[in-house]
Length: 334
Image 1: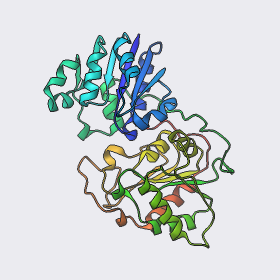
Image 2 (image 1 turned 90 degrees about the vertical axis):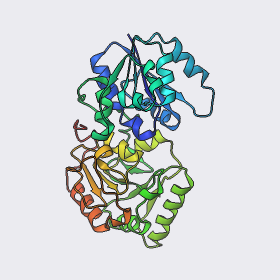
Image 3 (image 1 turned 30 degrees about the vertical axis):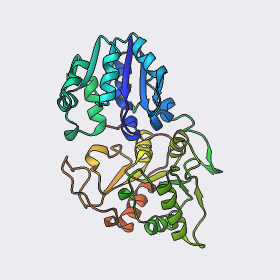
């Protein structure tokens, strides 16, 4: 049996598809499962433990090898977790015996209906993204996250022993999610262990990290700045070895959640109802002052500067008081 899974959205969406793939693997242990990812998400391919094969669709290129594999794969089933025009065409061209998609995506473009044999009624508005992806499979949440980071149990990062440093990931694709540089600097100066800064090569992210370093000043404790020097998979491995991860709503937040690391996640303009980490060692702080645990689909967006340094430091202190572990905290990603 051969199963094709299409996830052509952003990195965060791709990461949060891992439990759905793990659920398919539990249901079909002998199946050959192929996952198609989009652009930068493809760099995380080796971490999707349920997939036997990962293909990367590169934007702006012909992708002849990907299209050929989709068309000639002899699929028993295709699951379209994406719901875009491109994925609908890909699902149809797979010629799978059964093709699963979301009804909401068909309602947006009526012609997409011909691509699917089965439509899922789940509403993205009413569900956490993990649950939305699981709904397409019709399977319950698996026992683990389905995301295994190669090298995640290594001993050292930049000379620092695993579990003896905190990762701070201040950047993301949307600058309105940035927290103030001077507040990041104050957190760094108050940490009881070394700080490792991570981030992508994007100019805005690099400028943000530079502003944080400038705010630290000459008397600040040493900071290990790895921003822009690591691949996405290497960032994931660093996060998996951290004692604690502090980040805004970003791919790094999802990576920490999949690795079940103690983490503090900062939300302002985006709704934690759909994206927040849900494992026991996660603390979610919301700029609007709302309780993330009881927050529903309606969210009062607030600027990131409404999050105080004191609240962040208190959340960090509470997590660092917990017993340290170099292993994932537990299976509760639901």
